[in-house]
Length: 264
Image (cartoon, rainbow, N blue to C red; front, side, top):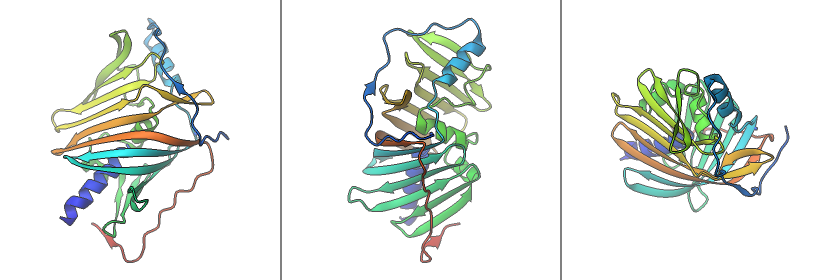
């Protein structure tokens, strides 16, 4: 039983994680995509550069989000505080409705640390440990891009194909064992990511709300739904971004009480 609870919490943390001074606590007005769509250029490089130019840029980013978590039919509501330092670390704190922190994670390009306060256990592993729960190509950059609604660099390059599907841009291709399709809205922001590894029986789908917070001209999705199938487990996480701070000094506290059991 202990192992099942731990695996559920771990999956929730990992799959949910997975900006010079501009401070925003109260979010700006909603931005919706226009009715007209930008035409494709005949030069693929120009299209790729245009898509990348729409990414939400940041040095540090803090997001408070309401989360609905469904793991194989077991449903829970929680609040997630997510902090990121571009290219360096992602910190996640999960609290229950009563305001009690049940889990905390610190992910870097090299390591994963998860503290389970519910069971007083602690895990420290290399980043490759995440490949037990996701495709082996999963990288720190993927997690960062998914949480910020940005393009994934491994996909948005000249090896991929860009077409217009139902009036909107669509990018698709393959990378080693996975096939991917990325749909963009009329703002050329990522609307949906579909990542599949048929041989491994793994699938990841990320759908953004399609409306955005305008933070000094930079657009961040108002939320996302992350659906994953890994190793027979089905995970669905709905995120609603309620507070954002961009390019401010952030702390990433992660200490482990001496009484916590270390999991191997």
